[in-house]
Image 1 (cartoon, rainbow, N blue to C red):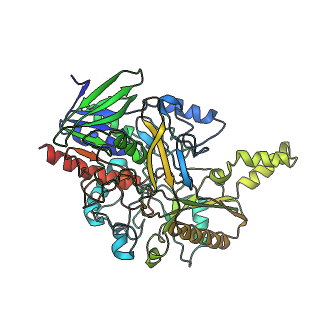
Image 2: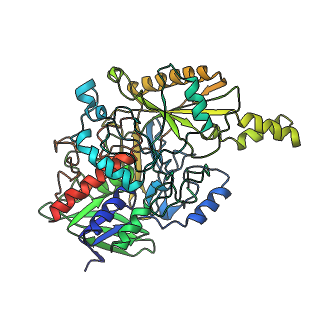
Image 3: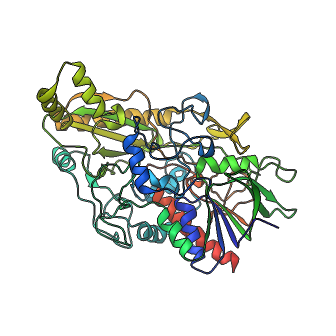
Length: 537
C-alpha cells in the first residue's frame, strides 16, 4: 500500500509546481505535493536575515544536512565543480521554492528569443513560439500579480494590459534616464511580480529594500500563494519529504516515486500523472538517480540530454560613484532597466544582454554599505565625521548588472558525483561548466555599455567585476523539443519516454534568452496544466 495516493503527484512546490497544483486541484483532482524543505515563517526569516553576518540570497533560510543547497559565498559548498569555470547560481529548499529570494523581475521573453537558430544560426529553436505562449503570459501575469507598463521589453507585443500600474521609478532611475536621452540606451520601468497597489489580499510594496532574500509583507509574489490556494481546494502538501527515486513499469509509464521523510521513514507516492518541478539542478539529480534495468541512463533520459545544456545568465557587474547624490538603498532592489539591447543581428556573433539598474548601491559587488563604513573607519574617521562621510559616499553609489545570453552546450552539465551523497542517499551534483566565446563577447560588450552609461552620467571610480557573477537563473538540463533523440520533453513538457511524466521549470528551456526566467516558467506551467487536464479527461 502506497504511503501517498493521488491523481497527480508533484515533486517541488516552487512557482511551476504550485501553479499546476492549484490549477488541477481547482478541477477537483486529488493532488499531492512532495517538498524537500519546510514551510517558512516569514517573521522568523526576516529576523534570521537581519541577524546574519554574511547577508546573501540564501541567508534567511535553513542550511545543513536536512536541506543542503548551494550558497553564494562558496561555489564549492554544495556543488562539486569540475570546471573550467565555476557555476555560481543558487537555490533554496523550502515550501515555495526559490521564489522566496528571487528579485521579482517578471519580464516576458521576446519573439525572437524563440527562433535563435532560424534567425541567427545559433543554439536551437523552441518548439513553441511567442504567439502561442502569449495568452499564457497574460494568465501568468494575472496569477503572479505583475506591475508594469507597456513596452518592456519593447519587442514583446501584448494582448492585455498589466494587472497593476508600474512600481514607481526611483530618483536614481529618473536621473539616469535623463542623462541617457538621445543615446541608444532606453531606460524603462521593469515589470515586477510585486504589488504596486493592494491586490489578492496582499499589500502594496513597502519599500523595505530586502526583496532579496525576503519580502517582509509578501507584496512580492512567492509560490506559497498558490500552494495555499491549492491546499484550499484539497491538495495535500507533504513538506520535509524528499523524492529519491522514480519507478517505471513494463509499459514505460511512471508507477511511483519513492521518498524519504526527515525522520528517516520511507514510502511511495502513486498517481495517474507525475510532475517533476524540482528546479533545473534537483530535477536532473532525481531523474539521473532513477537508474533501473528499464531506465539504464535514468528516467526520461533516452536522449542522453538529462543534465546537459546547463545555462545561466552570466552577469557583468560594474559600479561607480556619481557626482551627485542619487540616494540608493531605498525601495525594491531594481525598478528599471535597459531592455532594448536584447535582440539584433549581433546575436550571430555574441550574446545579447539586458541591463538591470540597481537600487542597492554597491551591496552586490562589494557588500556595501557595511564594507563602506569599515573602509572609512580604517581611514581614521569617527563620530560626526564618519557619519557625514558615510552619508556622502553611500548616496553616490551606482551599480549596473548586464545579464548575458548563454548558448546551450551539451558539455555544460550536471552529473551525479560517483562517491559523495546527501543524507538521503542521492549523489551530490557534479558540475562541468564553461563560458564560451559567445558569452565572453557578450560580457565584453556589456562592460563597454556600462562605461558609456557611466560616462553619460559623469561618474568616477568605475570598476568591473573581473569574473562573471551568477544571476540566480539555473536554466537547461531537461530541454524541450520535437525530436525525442535530442530533447527530454515535448512542447507540452511531457516526457518523450514516459507519457504520464511531465517536467516543468527552467530546466526545459532550450535556450536562455536574456529575460529573467520566472514569468516564462509560469506561462509554460499554466500551458502544461491544460495539457494535463486534457490527458486526464
